[in-house]
Length: 121
View 1 (cartoon, rainbow, N blue to C red):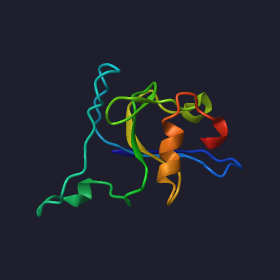
View 2: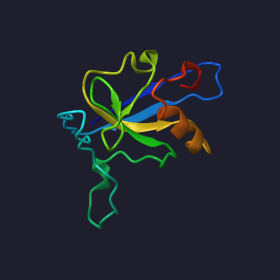
View 3: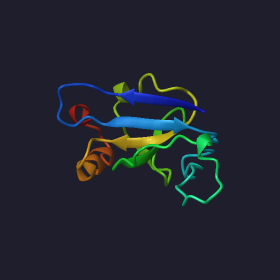
View 4: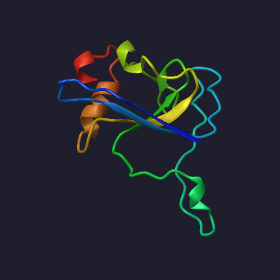
């Protein structure tokens, strides 16, 4: 298991961060099909939690990087500025877009735009 974090920094009030934990993630086969990503499960006694990375639940939106673009859990693209995904790897990642505490509504407004505004990202 590897972890990878892409963080943007600028003077804007709204910065979106992409946090991920890489597990075995099969690539999406086409844009219409939702990515095959793991959803949260209730802990069952006896599971070796030492085999998992656990983090605080962030109030963001789930994002899947298929090596070319960011997708929602339903397979819809998040149109991010090119500079935001520059440096992302060519292999799949599963993570979360997050804009800070108490900014969920603002984040959703930003990531749903078909023409991203650089200063918001």
